[in-house]
Length: 289
Length: 261
Image (cartoon, rainbow over all chains, first blue to last red; front, top):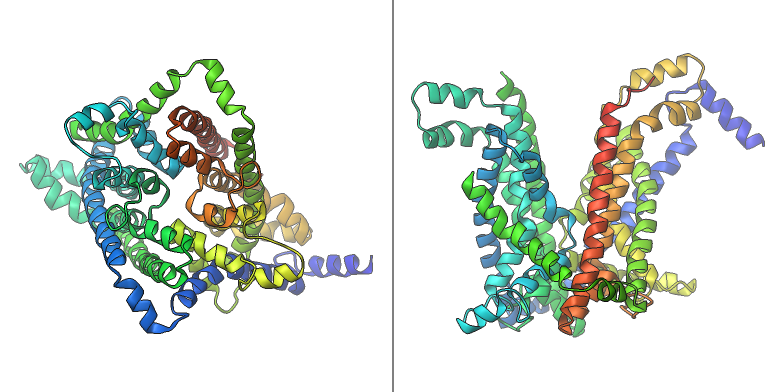
């Protein structure tokens, strides 16, 4: 009872902030929660990776299987980012600079891969290209392998990373409007000239932002790729898939060594993202002038 | 334009259509039989139930974290702010093995918890922990900008009119945060239902006990029982659409309602 009265009285004296004790508890809870659930798992990745020393760490990385996984991950990410960069630019351009029926449906479709379980994303391609799938028998007859091979991995990755570039660009280009483009065209510039001289320079930070997030997800995707990959050692294992295999075989140092590379990718992505966000925020008032 | 639509249909529309055509190849009885079989039903219950509980924890802790980050100054505040994004950025398989090792019987947190008689890794509690990990940025990143933009003048006005701090928070601040809090909750819930990578390592994956729906899809696929996998996927997809729909409704409700009286 007295406790309640005291805190009520303290609150009444200053209703613009909480009593010191409450502030302390809230801050403590926030810090404790983030430390337990986020910081500790991240620290653990590096601690486990180096638990047998630096030598063991690097020898785990240069295992042929490890190198093959790294190579495949880089290849898949490069293809997916390139395809989605082109698509994202065109989609954002079409959506923000033109009016057409079905526009909001198009935006919903672009967002779709974000809200679908990665496993379902993988399943979609199994249903299309698997042996019982729609194109499976035809592909089999023509000797084309999509599922359990690199093309399937690329397709699944393109699907899950599909929204990133377009999502980064749509709000940016909406805000910038079409005035500058209209001016350029009225001065006699062609469509392509307008795009490369006016639109692209205006959105370059947004493009980098989308590519950054797209790349991070492409390299780290697990669920969708796991369903379509077939887990052929040294051939269709990307880095996240190899992490799973090594971990399940109790090769903890090797699993966490590969995982540490992916964790570093995540950290670098976050740092660059912060820098890009600063550029995007600065870019805003300039484009308004 | 043409390119956009072509690319979109190759990558998104055709696969989706494939899923629905595959579903319609099933008779209603077959579909119903698969979805209500004991193992499927349990997997769906585990995924939805634990995802809901984890999103509820994220709702409360997310608001606490946002409050601390926005309203208070403490050492390391900016670092903890950046840390919130890690579950977004860290590949799910990496998060999965890290959480498992952390909470395993001999892990940094698993060992002290084991002494208390609490087993996290390889139990439903482990699924719950992984879902909390994956969902926290959704609540924080949707609520944070709203609290930052909230005008402190209204609070000061309420205070000068004699409201105590609790009244200011419950009558003035919380009502303006509620749409963002609900949106964050829905996003965290949706993500946790579909989550695969960060959950399967720590889950134990015992059928009917700690087997999540996405894993059951993968298992059915590996058994070549495509119909079963498809039926489960359709249930999850419909749930995902309902959640997106709910989020859109919350957003338009928030935009249309009169700002704080």
